[in-house]
Image (cartoon, rainbow, N blue to C red; front, top):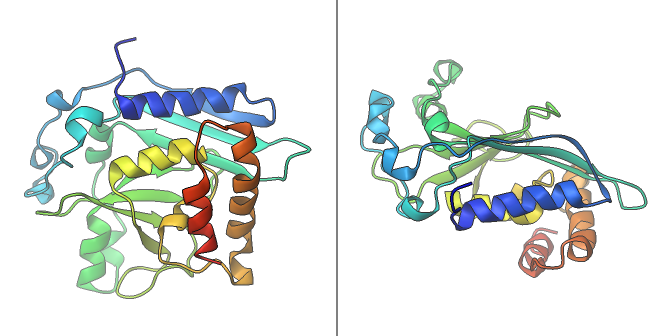
Length: 235
């Protein structure tokens, strides 16, 4: 395998750690070959006219993930607390090749039509079918990209569609944090302007608390203190 950049090394390490951990059951996973390098990527507007004016994030030149796909769906095994995770990342060539969202035209306002039409899925949960998805928002003259997460219909609010929350993370920050959390369900809310204290958020809050209790023991090379502080700030 050719030499890997920092982001690729982090993802591969995390992928293999999930596989090797005897307290985690892997239900499905996949690691693709290395695809196009950043230097071979077409300009965004070569994918579609609506991407005119969109620019790649400046730090992609050295740290773009070239794996065609990286995915894993897993859950903890007894005696650990029960929680699970899933991620499914695609090469950015495939991300930008996605056709326009067919549901965008059904949104009730022009703002929401434009918003939905600007989203490109970067992470999803196809095995569990949970519907959780993360998107980059491809806008002209916007760098770094905005990253948005969709899950609970009660999250977010006007003028955006229900269920969408903006993350306090750039694209590469998303990849780095995914590697640390192993894709634990709901980790993205640690970087969103939400409160997890209400009982309706228990199914998000409890797995995150369990992750931050057991992952420092399972994966002691990582520093989970910043994520613990983010969770406490949302309780």
